[in-house]
Length: 457
Ligand code: UD1
Ligand code: CA
Image (cartoon, rainbow, N blue to C red; front, side, top):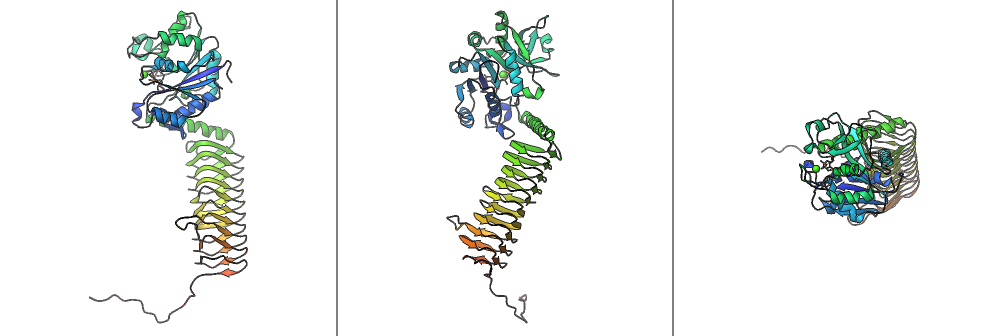
C-alpha cells in the first residue's frame, strides 16, 4: 500500500517501429510475460483506485491480451506526445489525489522504488530520475543553483550545457491529480518535436510554487525501457540473472546462474540442485533435495522430495512423487501423476495416467489414459493403444504386474494383479491375475531352409 490513495496511468500507445514486428511493442515478452503485464502486475501491488492503460497501436490485441476487470482503457488514436497520452486518460480519472504515470515498455521497476517515489510525491510533484554515464536521448533534469528542480528539457530542445546534465527523467512520475488535469489543458506543442510533452508540467509546477522532488531507483535496470529486440534481450537476461540470484540466496544450487530461465514461479525446498540450460514455466514446485540435470523443460509441474531428473526431460502439467528417478529423455504430458519411487526412463511418454509407487517404465514406451498400480514393471517398447481413431479408452494395470517387452495393450483392457504378459503380446482381452498371458504365434524352426538367392539375368 502506498502513503496516499493513488491511481495509475500506464502509457502503452507507442508503436515500437524498431521492434520490426507485427506484435505491438508492449506485448513482447520478458520471462514469458508481456512487458505491459509486468507493469500492470507491479502497479496492482500499490492497490490503485484506478488502473488506466492508454493504448493506440494494435489496440484490439493489446486490450484482449491484457484484459482484466480492474483495467480501464483510454485510446490515444494518434501519438501526439506523452502529455497528450495522459490527457486521454483524464475522462477515466478517479478522485485519488495522486496519479502515478508508468510506461508500458519499462517492465522491471520494483514496487519498492515506486513506493519511494509516491512517498516523495506527497503534496509535491515527484520524478523518478537516474544519473547516467551516457544520458543521450533522455530528457534532462534542470536544477537551479540551490539544487531545486526547475524543469525538464528534452534532448532535442536542449542547449549544449543542458546536454551535459547526466541526471535524466525516467518518465515515471507521481503527480497531484487535481493540478495534473489543469496542467494537461495548458500544454503546448511548440517544441522541436511538435509534441505535447508531459515533462512540461514540471515548469508549470515550479511556477505555481509546488515542490518538485526526485527519487531514485535501487538499480538502473529498473528504469530501462524496450525499443528494440536488442534491449528486450538485455532486459530478459537482467531479469533472469535477478531471479537466479534470488534462488542462490535462498539456497538453490545452480550450476550456472547465467544459464537458467524462469518464466513464471519456481518454488523450492532445501538442497535443490539445477544443472545448466533448464527452463521453468508457469508454476513449478520442487521438493527438498530434488536434482535436475541439464536442459530440462518443466511447465506447471510439482516434483516430490528426493526425485532425480536426468538430462533432456520435458514435463508439462504433471505431478511427480518423492524419490522418483526420471530421464534422460523422459516426457510427461498433462495428467501424468507418478507415485513415490517411480522410474520413467529414456523415450518414455506418459499422458493422463496414474502410476503407483515403485512402478517402472524404463525404456521406449507410451503410457496414455492408463491406471497403473504399484510395483509394476513396464517392459521396453510397451504401448497402450488408447485411441481407436475416434475415442480414447482406458488401460488398467493392477499391482505387481510384469509386462514383457514390445507389448501392445489395446484399450479398454485390464491386466489383473500379479499377471505376467509375455513379450510381444498384443492384448485385446483382459488378462487374468497371477497367470502368464501371451498372444504370440508359437515359435517354429524350419531346418535346412534356404535363403532366397539373387536371380541371374
Ligand atoms: C520520454 C520523456 C523523456 C524521458 C524518456 C524516458 C517526454 C516528453 N519525454 O521521452 O523526458 O527521458 O521518456 O524514456 O515525456 N507514448 C504514448 N503516446 C505518445 C507518446 C509516447 O503512449 O504519444 C508512450 C510510449 O509508448 C512509451 C512512453 O510513452 O511507452 C515514452 O515515449 P517515448 O517516445 O519512448 O519517450 P520520449 O518521448 O522519447
Ligand atoms: Ca517520442
